[in-house]
Image (cartoon, rainbow, N blue to C red; front, side, top):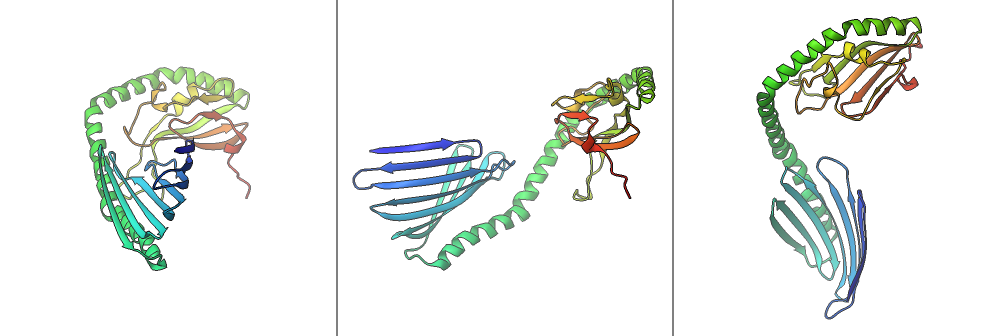
Length: 280
């Protein structure tokens, strides 16, 4: 007879189970934490006690490529001893490698079973997995750029034509905003920005969207919904497949403000938190 209680959420998975039977009767408590990252990292631990003894198990699993998940778990029990379990899921295939280290409960075995896989994983990730995934991503981006080059050029021309048509409307909007010390877009840039942590080989890929943004200002307010900014009039995607941001320098009530927003992030200006502190 087996009964269990399970609570599964977006960030965790908790299980309490009880089994009564022959030859195995046991109680189990298990917890798994799911990190909300691109690698879908999961850390888990469990305690299992029964007529066979007591087993504590802990481990982690992480997505290392689009179709592969690598996991490792250390099992420490009495009288089972210490063992390391390595599992690789590749598409619909599963490779399982159980490594029995010792029959005795030795601290040194627990230490090496825990630290050894971590050191090996980080070394492989830095020297093999990371460079391979970056190369694959760059190849995919290059193919995407080549396949969409004509479309990007067309959208660029359409955006430039739209900006030309906006000039007169923008002039009137600026005059109205200046008369009431309202919202003036000083500079606005959209695309991929390079920071101090970026690689030297990475280049800035941004477009000037000052005019299109000023054209969207109404009653000294600018509101952009939670969607990609590339679809706005006068915009286009300067770096397909890459992470983009919108950087805006604006003036409100005669004071400079600045904000950097993610591509699909809702943006509302003006805001007091965007104010540039010029004291001192």
